[in-house]
Length: 232
Image (cartoon, rainbow, N blue to C red; front, side, top):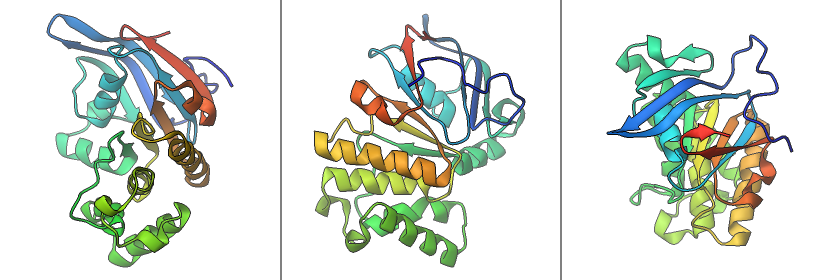
């Protein structure tokens, strides 16, 4: 495993799944991100580690648009998010990013099938295509027989598998995973990590995995440490 803060292809002119240039973010007088630079190649899996308060979650929030940066640039698939309208910005993030949360964030009134399908509905993907995609993903995560169960009838590991499928339904270039095994026991967490690795390989999706767990980094090509708002 390579431990580095630069991509092995950093000198090329290719379009990276994710490119962050000199990201700065402050809250009041506190500098949370201090000139972060990061590149993820297509299909590359990178683990981001560091203590609480180091800026990991803020970085994810800036990438997915929850928090605006004060300075710097983010590119998704070679497209700079600095140079597009607010409407186009929302659309490209919806299309390019899948998000996996520690606490699943499944809609409790929807079945596993419907939770996976929901982002594809928002993007107006034709019905037959999105239903075919849901069936394919349910098979990939081993939950075809649980398709019509709601989250309260699923185990934690099953809920997280549904959340991963939901993050992939629109075929993004990048998955952001924020402590995806933090709510799971060791066995379920290991299954979820293996699933993330397998699906990343199958769909050529880059993964930025925020974790405190060294064992979770086994599926990643690189491990990057973050401390006091900087990559070290």
